[in-house]
Length: 195
Image 1 (cartoon, rainbow, N blue to C red):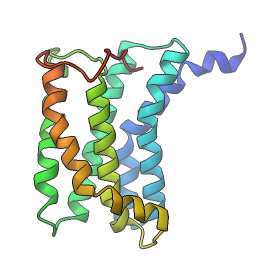
Image 2 (cartoon, rainbow, N blue to C red):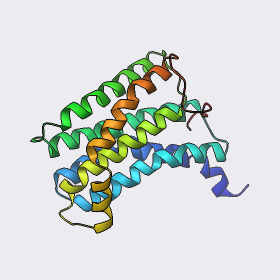
Image 3 (cartoon, rainbow, N blue to C red):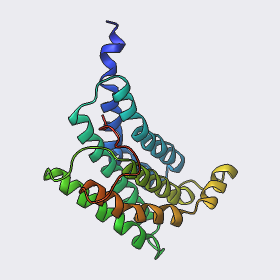
Image 4 (tube, rainbow, N blue to C red):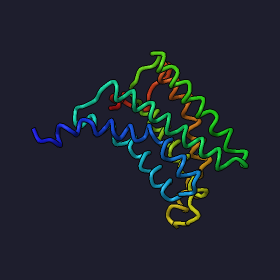
């Protein structure tokens, strides 16, 4: 068996670990003013959430440990973006009421999972909420992080308002939590566990 095939079983968990360690490398980049590097690595870290589970399923190396790591990496990444947003948007009244329900959601899900009350399975509603949330949080940091303006990205941030993206995630959070607790259906067929 070629060496790269033996090594590839570690790639999904390495991607997840890169997202888990986001506070270590993103916070200093933001605080020190490396806006474009911060944004690039933030988008790269967010994209690992889409790739790690798919690779694990494709390469048949899904593990309970990988699924658990994925959940905590998602939470660490979102908490990091919220914290950076609080630094960035400290003078804007609208930011805190939008992110408070999301922080509460993540804290409850992490606590319930740590206590064994909730399964480490993915759901379409949770993935949709997370995609909206990550996009909204990253978009909220775009204008405060770079000092540069790229027409296409600025148009995206203007078209999909940060408030609308975060509000959509806030609206989906109770549904996602109810699904985790077994009280509400998912958006579609149940998804496989993340890897």
